[in-house]
Image 1 (tube, rainbow, N blue to C red):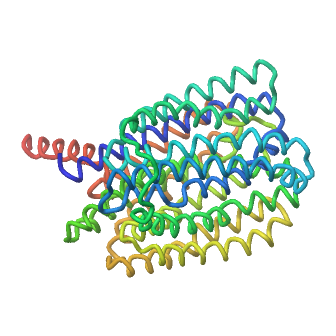
Image 2: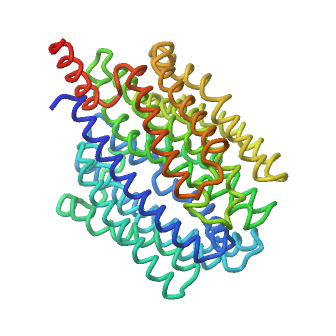
Image 3: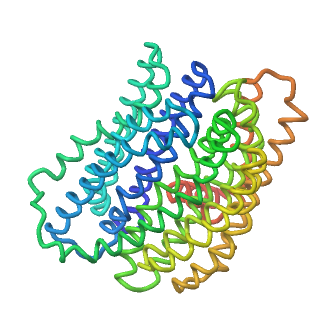
Length: 489
């Protein structure tokens, strides 16, 4: 199988996994949002600010180092396993003792116990890191996908069962803990018999240095993308935080989903091709950039167009305050595509210092804005985030990263224009239908008209304007139809 075909198969498995997990989480959210008040989700979001931040220390870039490093021996692999496991245990202990301070910060005593229960995840996250990274390094994304899908289904099913049993907020809290715990024995089995005791630590210092730089950048990215939650919870309270965080979750359901699916595959494949020489790594970057844009752009504009109906269907009428943040944040997905490509390129080229500089700059700009606007309203925070991360920062950051990696910039941006035009035209048309054609119709009828109409319109425009299509099987099918038509004529 060629590099391109193998990469496409791996991305397909990653997308399937991420999509399935997000659908499972979305269904769970739809059910729980109708059972519990927004305040309960706000409490979980408050505790998640600490848990999410500390989770970066359980990785510290080690997973990407294992994926991208040229050569690895069994001693290095084993050392990373023990190190990540020890970090996970240490982070659990730190979380346990920091929990009262988090509760005091938010003036909510229940947050202390929520943090302590959620912190159990660190033990399993640390233990799972090395097996997952090695499976991805070996291009075994199918096995990772299957494990993740099954564990997510079982954990969310257990959470729903606990919710209907009357356990309240704890049914929300235990879902991520169970997800990581269910993965642990399966992932451990893939490395059982290969692990060695910790030894020759100096032999692993290059991995630790590479991973440490990426880990530091990841911590900065955490601040850039999560300080808004912290400040909204601090200044505006649990309910506004719940409305904002749910809107952000719905946006992340497609942007983070695709980036999480494509990123490890792209970095692994680009690193390999770069070591082999030539310009194939740049060609691969263009392919994956177009692939991500092909899906993110239309979903972003489509969600923005029908944001009220999305909120009503997914969360219910008590979450109407999430409509404006969802609409504005969804549009930031267009710029997010370019920002994701910046990360792929710099990591694949081992330019960790430049990667750190990039994250430091974006962190500074976003944090200053969040500090100012979080004291006003969640709508102001949403507008700033979308304006900065979706419009102002992407183009200069992308241009700078391409120059650092020796890539051309213009051809990549030009290749995105037909995709962007198709998505914007489709989004504008659906928005017009939403407010001037189907308004007044029942909710399900509106969605039943707008979604198929948007998909059909985008598909027609993409087939006409986007060449070649970033989905190889679909392009080959269209080529066969074209040849058949020419032959018949």
